[in-house]
Each structure stands twice: as structure tokens, then as C-alpha cells.
View (tube, rainbow, N blue to C red):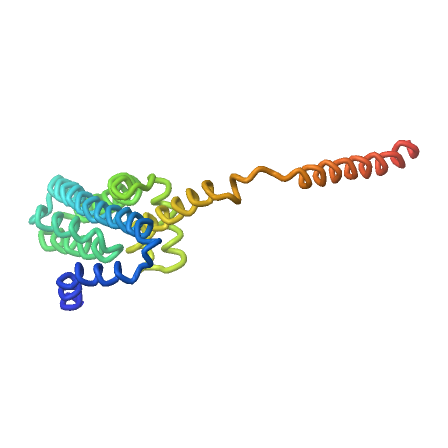
Length: 222
């Protein structure tokens, strides 16, 4: 996989240029604009994810230091930088922190405190850090990030959680462009025809007559 990624990056510009030449000329500006917007969103996702990992590294390190864990800074840094991998990064960090607490045994309460610190930072990541930092970097609101991650986890499991935010940003861009095209189309802007208005008024009149007719028997019964 790393070798494939390396060769993909080497030929990335060349592949983009080849793809651009295959696009019909009349669609070139529109496709280029959408691709540029998606590229900017994905770049923002990488920067936002890196920022979130650094924040998590600081929180994990500070929490483990306060809990009295040896090598708290390296463990916190590794856990935070692996946080972009759902479940696995947290599992590795929790294992290292608990293992170090057991090696430097200070009682059961010490181990419980270490687990509590790890769970607290993980909860902050899921509810505040990722929705706000990563979501803002790709143009998604916190509630949109949470809903996207929940839906992706339900539909695609682990891979869905890993790719939820960037895919959500891409989908939002495409939906926004499609909405703009629809609102500027003749289908939406065309005023109603006179015949349609006459038919709708006639239908309303017939409906009112039907309602009056159905109301008469109830009055006679009373």
C-alpha cells in the first residue's frame, strides 16, 4: 500500500492532466470548478485532522501526566497521532497506558484513573474536537459531522467511520451544486401556464363542491 501511494503521488499531476483532456470542452469550466472545490475540501480535511490529532496528543499527555503514568508524553503523543484511525488508535493507546500503569503498580485506583482519563479524552474527541475542528475545516457543521459518522458507521462499519467526514464534505459540495443548477433552471423558474391555473382552480372548485355534498347528509341526520 505505501508503494502504491508513492507511485500514485509521483504520477498524480500527470493523471490529472490526462483526465482533464478527456472532459468535453463545454463541461470543462464546470467540472474544473467542482474538482477545485472538492480538492480544497479534502485538503482542509487533512489539515483539520492533523490539528485534531495534535490537540488530542496534548490532552492525552496532560491527562496521563496528571494520573502519574510513566512515559505519559510519548504514550499520549502516539495515541493522539493515531486517533485518525477509528478504534485502533485508541485501543493501542489504552493498552500502552494501562500496561505502563500495571508495570508501575500503584494500586487499583491508579489503573482506574488511567482508564478514566483515556475514556474522557475519547469522549471529548467524539463530541467536540472532531465535529468542530475537522468539520469546520471541510465546511460541515458539528451536527452534520455527527450524523454523517453515524450513518457511515451503520452502513459501512469501520471503513465508513474512517472516510465519513471527507465523503460527507464531497457529497455536500455535489448536492449544493445540484441544488444551484436546479434553482437556476427553466424548470424551476418557468411561471405556471394559464391552462394549469385554470385547471387548478377548476379542481379546487370541484373539491369544494364534493366537500359540500358530503356535509349535507350529516346535517340532515342531525
